[in-house]
Length: 170
Image (cartoon, rainbow, N blue to C red; front, top):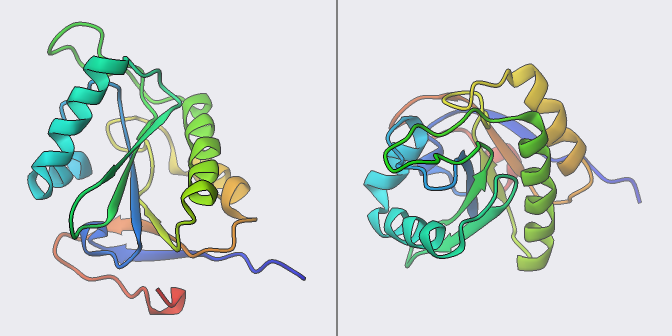
């Protein structure tokens, strides 16, 4: 049958998404100081602690991902879109389209492997990561145009605002 492309653009607060998983971009060893990462750190401090421990233990490369499952919250998928901060307290590097592409490829596999029902994404790697949304969005379409679960793109962030996700039938 013909696959329906299930990418939905919404405005609102991604932390209030009803999607089963929320993915966002960070750097290895990221300190979650800005934007969405900071909001996630404040909402789920255990996730941040576990992420730091994971990075210290495994020294992951950019392009990989790390999935966190807390009690009662959504699944948080940390996409390593930026280059690592090399020294303690150093600033994470820029994101690259190559890294984003790798992350999305890995995310596609993760969705299938974990049988996820839905996923929410921000404008990946366009904040601190420094990339242009016009370059990133087509990569999302390439990777998720053939996955038959709702992909909710939070293209405008409004703190505390519940987005209209009803079209996606989550």
